[in-house]
Length: 261
Image 1 (cartoon, rainbow, N blue to C red):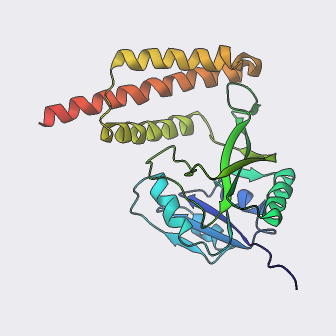
Image 2 (tube, rainbow, N blue to C red; image 1 turned 180 degrees about the horizontal axis):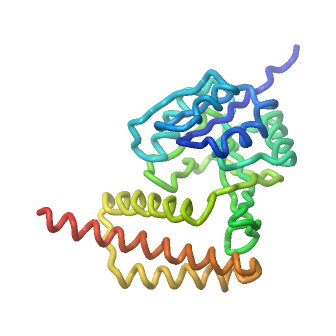
C-alpha cells in the first residue's frame, strides 16, 4: 500500500501587488498543490493576475492587522502543509528542493525556517544584520498559526515544537524606490506605535533619538554594514530614521490622546 503524500499550500496576503505578483507566483505554481491568496482591497490588477493561477482568491477589506489577516488566510487552506510567501519574494531552486524534501519527510511537530536575501536599491544586502535573515514560513497547517500582532507578526512556537533550518534562499525585493521605502516605513511605524500604545508603553523624543543612534551603530559597525558599501551606509541611516519615527510616533499619539481628554 502506498503512503499518502502530504500536500502543500502556498499562501499570500496581498494588496496592490501588480508589480510583483506574477513574478512571485511563477516561482511556485508548478510544484505546489494549492494556492490561497487573501487580498485586503487592491485597486490595481492584483486580482486579475492572481486568478490566472488560482480560484482560491478571497478579499477581506476589514483590516485588523497582519497577524489576524494571516489567520484568516490560513482558515481557507485545505492542504497538510502551509508555506507562506510575500508577493515581493521569489523562491530559488535550492529552496524549492528543500521545501519538497521537508514535506516528504513529514516530521511531527516540526516547523521550518530559511534565509532571506534582500535586493535593496540595486544590490544584495549581505551584512547590516540582514543576512541570513531567517524567516519561519513552513509548517503543518493544523499545528500552529500566526499571532495577533498588528505588525511584525510571528508564527506561534510552543515548547514541544522543533524549528529546523532549510537550505536555499528566498529572494526579497522589499522596496521599489526611496518613496516606496518611506511610505512603507511610515505605515509600519504607525502600526508599531498603535500596538505598543495598546500595551501601555510610553515613549519620548530622547528615547527615539538614542534608539536611532543605537540602530545605526549596530547595523553599520557591529553588523559590519560598511562591507555593503554606500548601500550599507544608506540602509543603516534609513533604518535609524525609521526607528526614530517609531518612537516619536508613539510619543505623539500619547500627546494627542491627552489633548482629547
